[in-house]
Length: 520
Image (cartoon, helix red, strand yellow):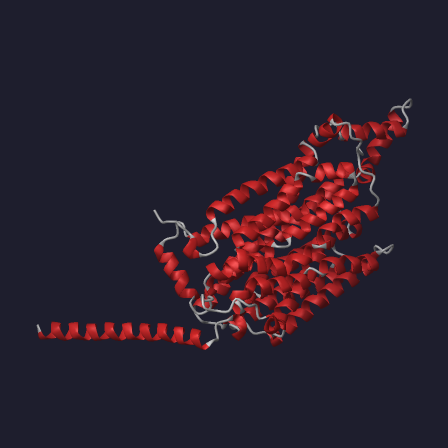
């Protein structure tokens, strides 16, 4: 029976890790619909009105009170605990739109702060500890969210801010592990594991919907905490920071990885000081940052605003918009897998240079996606066309795993976590700016023309960043990575000389054998 490679196990656990990371990020987006009384009242108005007409002796206010009590009749550990210790709480949250916006946005307020520290900490302590704890602590905080919400929405805001701060360490930390484990010609495919976030969105939205239907919204957070804990236990047992630390890796796989990474792995004699000036003055670094900026602007606009767009412009119901929220991200993951295999094939067969391949992938995930959003701006008045174009736009973003995400490891594997941290610090800003721009353009003006302007701006960001990347990027190993020193060059030359000497000896031995056979 063929033994499963350690890199394969690593891919699946990284994939599930990013799904867990996004599970923490999106769970409040769906539970708030059930939590906030004003939201439920709007959807139940028809039911209450009909009931009032049928029960002449019962006032509408009494029926609303009865309906609210009915919704909250499901068992809640948190309410039971608060009743037990005699602490008053709000049964049904009457948060206005401003308060809801604070609760939903709090996760991102400090998320950018830990991007660079995530790469630095992973380089010092290892990705296993940093990525694992960033995810599992975020999941453990989920257990506290229901009781925080019952006590005061301001406590909930602080709790969500802490979750965003902690989980911000995860993304840049992962690039440190990728640089140590994955051969250059396999990075495109491996980085698709990062898009476990897309499958997390596609999977958890409907799952949480069913949980709230059969139980209550509090159970969503209990499930998040339990799932995150199980993932963390598997992560701690099966994942190691480098192939040499893995106790169960085969010698054949270990030799293959070490041989593939010999040109870029940092040696023990390399300087431990981070070349900050070289990093911040590097054109390839900033090209990757720009590409990530445009891609994330497009992703956040479509992921966050599309459901509102379809409800307001096309009058879709919540079930349809829920499916629409998940399907494009599932397509994004599938496209990423297919494109990454094609990209790695081009590299292994040397049909395209690494720089040109990263340019091709970025052209797809930014420029082609931007063209789809541009078409959405002009043809989105047709509901079918809007669905197709939105799905295609999100799908094409899957090429990011073979583009700027992989290029960051290409140019500086020794500092990939730090570079991704810089990219993440800047790239997370569209999470604030894009919703603000949408709010300004559509405030009191929910028309197709106003949404057309939203998509035109989004398209300009995508196409502009993609064009800059294609024109000016470079995905070759940078000198400041720490492997351009004379000692490293001599070491590489020694390896080459040994290889040439071995080949020459083999050739001499073969010649002697052939000569002896001919004499015999």
